Length: 223
Length: 223
DNA sequence: ATATACAATTGACCTAGGTCAATGTCGTCA
DNA sequence: TGACGACATTGACCTAGGTCAATTGTATAT
Image 1 (cartoon, rainbow over the protein chains, first blue to last red):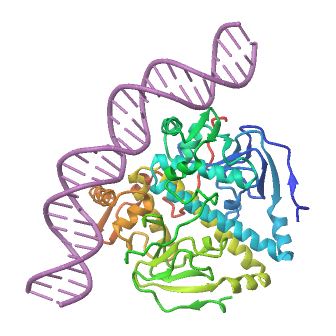
Image 2 (image 1 turned 90 degrees about the vertical axis):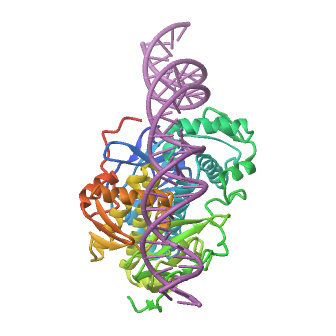
Image 3 (image 1 turned 180 degrees about the horizontal axis):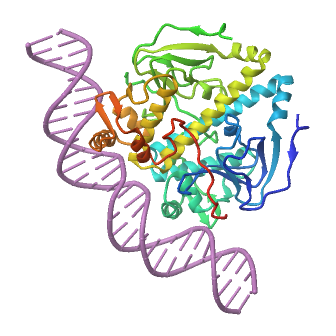
């Protein structure tokens, strides 16, 4: 199963794992550290699509066109597993479970993106940042890290870019959350003091540690 | 190949194809008509995630959890093909190409969602509506319909919800675009007069009829 | 034909959050 | 140790677009 996986030497902060339009050869799994993926618009503006933590898979969006639509850059010293896609495919013809596992992961990615679209399209700045922090917390928790205390490897500007906010707004919200007693910020270090109340601020479905979930249908106000 | 596909009787406007948390049995392909998919938040608020035109596939986000995270509702009289997922999977163990075709479609869906996240996160109201119209136009064109003239099956309110705008803003933009000579609106009917200039307004990468594309990397301002 | 209800438009007003600018803090390198 | 440069914070101001409300147009039911 992991006979095809190749462990590469670690990336340093700022190194690219791949760039936009690089040919698609491999999926990548983060072993340690973190990365951001981003698109750029014609004017050179960067649009961050995601932050990627240990245990997460990168590159699923490249399968269709056989090249990477986004670039991936390390936010800190980061080690990566390379998974050659060709090998993965031939292996999966033998292992029936592997194929459907891949489908499940991609389906989950689509769900997560849908969740992000709700956040970007419908939520206030406050709700966005709270959702972001709760989401990070959940992801750390699932991987066995502390859910109440972690370091942000990305800058305020990266967070703002990702959430569709100005970096000044992000900064102001951090101090506001801190004054409200929701959390303690020290530079990159975050401690969630009152995680439950932060969930309330995020306006959602997340206090149970189960992230990226959707909500029961309502009575349905006809059409 | 299409021995497993079942054609159901058509849905009427307002009918649900499935609701949130319905168990996942089938993928669905739109044959004619159109639908919207949406999540609802705890307060009953509807969040539209997509509009679905003939030839498009719905339900890929349900594979992971074996239930539908979104609801799908017909915007007009709509006919649908049901594709039982179980059958699809067993069939794909025999046909090698089918499996990878499915992966490609899901990968494309992830790319499309990423594209939408850029629109929601980074674009102005004007750019959002222009992108939306160009995107629709491209999708119609690819399916053999007119790229310059089509009917919107969704309300202004649906469009606003989808784009993260108030319906009043959508309405104002339609009249503005019309006054600028970009298009002609009559209720639900849209005629794109100056598609190229509308592309300019959308601030993107779309005038060539190839939608959902990403852009070359820039010189990269280091870090 | 008329009533009803919903969809769309338009205007007036207001506010969340963006922009610009000044200042502060930290980490790195000579 | 000091100076530079990136990052972060904070304040003052401004505007894109949201909200509220009135009006009109359109479609369905009686």
